[in-house]
Image (cartoon, rainbow, N blue to C red; front, side, top):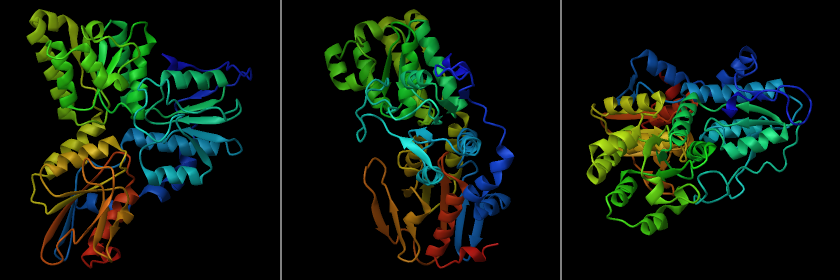
Length: 425
């Protein structure tokens, strides 16, 4: 696997150019990380069994929230890279994670973000051909940080040929999915990936199928799209109709009649876990209906590739939603898939507001700027919590949201009802 690649780079320096385990500088950058990303109110909530009450306002925090291990590691390695190479140009291939605050901090440290060649739209080739990162300005002496989502195999090879230093922060959970997709391709199975075809992680994951000649992938966003695949399997939808709908989300030269004979299900690690499971069950049932149990047993595979942190945060939200809550606030980037999954779960039970940053909550105007589920634009809602009487507000945050932003948001929630967050102790 190319992730084990080490020294003797093409630039001939003989120095190691690939780093995946940091630089042993954690103690030197820990205080900077703590000052950037810790949150007093979050610590207080954890110490008080995830509940804070001031006056008649109670905030309940889900027991699993915010930064996961993979995100912590990615951010830490980026800080270490800046410390290790203070005089070099450092680039980041995309966004380290989907959180605007964290990405702004890295830009303030002098790290330059590299953008896809075809920016601004969602309709990009999933495998990484068009839409790959633009590395044209990178020199052999530069440093490039690979994001937690990973890179496509094509982008990785471009960097390897350049011979620049690579600091790989790809999450271990993502690597596990890659191994699964690679094994599917090796054994002649098409990877049916539950994910967003334009998402960095899904693009990188899909590209793993291309390591083997004849390897293919097909990406579905949700169970409705998976249902269209099942219609083809059962002979109720033509190959042309299927490809007219999904050409942007399938591997090059995809032939449904050939490439949907053997299917292995995988997923973007941050999708809604129960939907990934339902998609696997649906496709398996469809293959049984079309070709029988024996055929499905030999030609269908599935494996739970939702990361544990995503699952834990979803489970914690389900547990919190069993309590009486007036509203739920979900904090995290609007392009954060795991945050959107949390917002979707919450919206099924209680009035939910997905905010990107603590500053979206204006305690003085008693407004909240948020993005409704399924929409692409923010709106501002007034009087989003009642102004008098007892109120219970649930809070959670995506795996790329730092504690300081969660704490700031909680402080602004209290301030909306006239409670000084500094007085809470």
